[in-house]
Structure formats: structure tokens, C-alpha cells
Image (cartoon, rainbow, N blue to C red; front, side, top):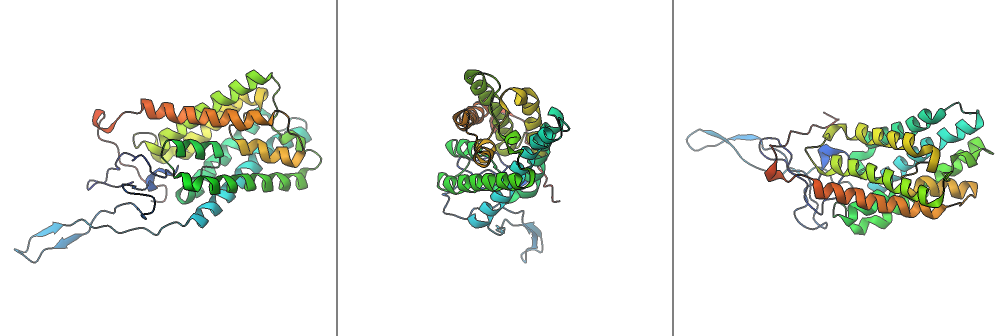
Length: 295
């Protein structure tokens, strides 16, 4: 994303690959083939004429993040998320409710938060195929990178799940999200909680007037809230790979299609609704300056 001379971040441009780490949004005025990076504020130069100093504008491109590095960050981030989010319910099963619902929600929410803060500036910290597809559909992410991102997420989920199986065998079944309600209710719950998640994610990732540098906290809190609401009923997956990896490791594919379809539809709906209700730049006050966590 570009910066204006006064240091204010400009609104997101359709077609921009949008990271969850808000201070490093990239400017994509052209095609994805161009290495578009943030514009930097210029340094003051002394003009030789009349001896009066003035400020000039110049672009200082930041180092480009290769797709390989993005996929590596996405793999590691998804591995951490699935390991933590699945370990909570497994420990709960093994030690007779030691974690509780609040503990399970905290495992997932805190994992999301720390991964966003640690890898969001590299890959965008999608961690979720439904999010990746929704952002691509709304032109916040290039379709050409979607298969690679989804492959990294799926492979990380499977690796994390088999790591958990090796550590906690034979209690792997506790980490699989299966509905305790009927199919229609489980589908509706997964749709609605993923809608909530993507509504918040789209806000903090694409709108400079949203919470900005608190993106990780906002998204992590949303995940925790959704698990507290829907965890006992559907497992509160919100993420196809949260269900797919543990299902493969445990050999339990009960109602798997619900957790592949409902979150994806909910993500598309949540991202689209925020985009529709989002205030345009000409109808709001001047956006606040977004500061980086790293400053």
C-alpha cells in the first residue's frame, strides 16, 4: 500500500495481495507481474538554485518477498496453528477435561494471534484455504498463487496432525471436528462463524480505518469467540485444513464435506459483506496513520 506525503496510508486497491499485517500492505496499481512495493517518504535535498531547500519524491523499493519464502512462512504458520488448535481438544480428552472449552478456545485464538504477528508481514498469514479463496475472489490476492498457498496449508495441516498422532496416540480422535448436532445445524454454524471471522479479517486487512496494528489481537479474539459459541456443537472449525489434517491422521471422515464447503461459503459471504458496507474514502474523515509492530 502506498504512503502519502503526510504519512497517511492510502485505501486498499482492488487487486492487491492483502496481508493481515496492516502496515505492509503493498501498492498494486499495475499488474501482479510488477514488483510493487510501498512508496517511501523522500529525504529533503538542498537545491543548488537560490539556496532554498525543498523536498523531492522518490521510490525506495523494499526487498521483494519471493513466493518460496511466502509459502515457507505459510507452511510454518499453518503448522503452528493446527498443532495448537488440535492439541487442546486432544489434551482435554486425555486428561478428562483439563483444558475445558475456554482452554480450547484460547489455544486456537492465541495461536492465530502469534502467527499473524510473526509471519503476517511475509505471507499475509492466511492459514486458511477459505480465506485465501475469498480474498482472491474479491481481488485482494492473485488467483495464480492460490493453488500454491492451499497446497502449503493442506500439507502443513497433515504434517502437524501426524506429529500430534505420534505424541498423543491413541487420543488423536479427540482433535477431529465432528458435529454433535444434525447436518443442517452444523452447516449453518460453520457458515456463520466463518462469516464472522472473514468479516473481521477483511476489515483489518483491507481498510486503514479498522484496528490496523491490532489485527492479530482482533482476529485471535474472533476465533476464540467463535469457538466458545460453536465449539460444543460443530467443533468450530472455520477452516477446512483444521478438519482435514486431523481427519486424515485419525482416519475419521465423518461429515467432512461440511467443514470443506460451509467455511468456504461463509468466508466468501463475510468478505463480500464487509466490502459492500465498507465506507469509501471520500465519505469519511482522513484515515489515521498505521504504525508497524516492528517500529
